[in-house]
Amino acid sequence: MEYRKLKDQDKDGDTNDEDVESLRGKAISGVSLKPLATLGVGSSDRSKWKRKSIVTLALTILTSSQAILIVWSKRAGKYEYSVTTANFMVETLKCALSLAALARIWRTEGVTEDNRLSTTLNEVIVYPIPAFLYLIKNLLQYYIFAYVNAPGYQILKNLNIISTGVLYRIILKRELSEIQWAAFVLLCAGCTTAQLNSNSDRVLETPVQGWIMAIVMALLSGFAGVYTEAIMKKRPSRNINVQNFWLYIFGMIFNAIAIVIQDFDAVANKGFFHGYSLITTLMILNHALSGIAVSMVMKYADNIVKVYSTSVAMLLTAVVSVFLFGFHLSLAFFLGSTVVSVSVYLHSIGKLRR
Image 1 (cartoon, rainbow, N blue to C red):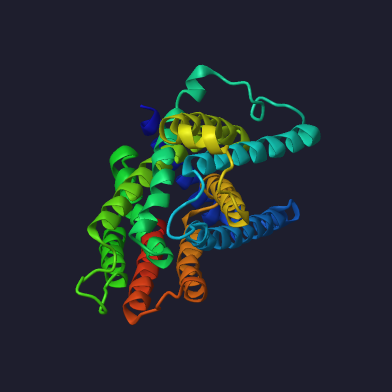
Image 2 (spheres, rainbow, N blue to C red):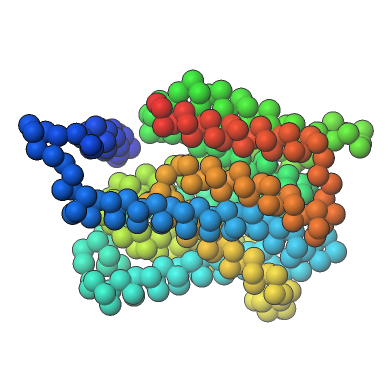
């Protein structure tokens, strides 16, 4: 029922936006709408554009460097640090950043109903589900690099667009346009083309294990993303930092359990931060800021932000990997990444024209 309400709210919101757009530049009963510009409408548009530009640039840099830092943090092909402790530190840092942002808001605006941390059980009880899904997905992203390189990971990561779109259709009952379905087909073709390997007996560069892990990650990311967006937009007035805080609290709890289950002996004998380096620290900082940036996109921006950041990130990751890891930028990879970029763009256009 909550998803149905959310869907209805989205429809109502879309109608209102279209009504406002249709009134721009026109007059109603002979009354000009130009005075609206003097009330700060133009300033508001510029502010939104500036915010979207900053979020797009930040998300592009963070996304492109994410896979590079994970691969770079390896020593002799393995992680010397505990990946569970690294994930725990990521959630802790994201929680601290959310609290810092809230503290600033409390100083300037005071404590209100929408920005205070105190909440009800019904509001908090929904956060463990996406937190647990993100835990599994974040752990898998470390182990997938045993089968795929950094540029290939950036390509395969786009499979979550398909899972997200299908889950939107199933869970939120949102219609998918013909353009979006065509974009899904192109996306699959682009991912496959980018993985073609002409220098080996294997047809695809990434083995079956890598593809399975990529598909599982896409499903987990898609479901967690749809669920989290539904939570955040269910109460639009609720401060995003409060929503993030509770999500990250449960993320810390689940990661602490993972440490006990998977790496308790290593942490007890060698210490919590054993094997950490400067690259590891930068990787943790990158992951934390990426999580904040994605939540900002969900709350304030739109899908086109992800389109630009995803497309440029694939190219940046490939170029940097050439110099750092000796990656061979083949024609198949170039064509595949181009097809993926076009499919991502078509998916966004299909959403806008739906």
